[in-house]
Length: 272
Image 1 (tube, rainbow, N blue to C red):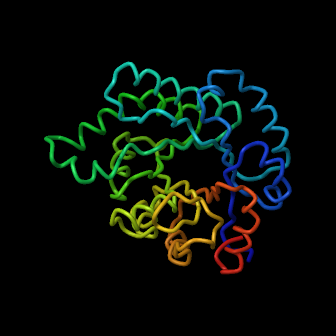
Image 2: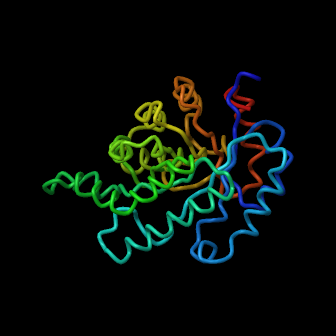
Image 3: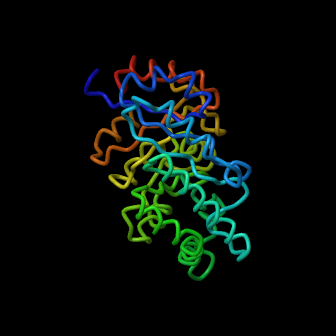
């Protein structure tokens, strides 16, 4: 058991308070989810950071946040919207710095439509990457300066390699790859994408973060691990080939399923 990977979690501050003992029993990585909305980002978020720091006393895992994503995509073509995107990413990194956070999740801009249509246009992929640079370049430099990784999470991505090409285009150690197992399983079941473990293999040691959630291959379920149809043995076998030590973050819709998720993976001999 002691050699098995240690599972962390994505939690709100309220849920962290509920599951604090569990999150402190081992060096479990934590992702805070309280900082994704414009109301919080535009308001006085310092009390939330102060509360987080108090709850994390004695915590030995890595800490980060889910970055803002509601209402925009990082490849926006609208110059006015782009200024909002840049502002939101900067605000998220302000919070990361205040927390001492080492990762911020950024949503991939790649859709199923892109998979079928980018090659239908001259420089389709190149243009999409250029648009992302216009929105993200300042945030990338800021992330480098504060020791934070921007991890790009698959959302609708049918091709596991597209956002890898995007991440590598920045030429920065501050831009890495995230995988959401439920999103990959949805893409596999509903759009003909590869299975989840193929996403892990595609990312290789560029993978620094993974959202672990179970699903049925039809929708974005965020079920307790073990309650869906993901082949967890194949996923953890692929993770076991990596040296990048990605943050293993259980991300559930119902946070009360966290203890059962850990117990179910432990019973399979996959994680602790």
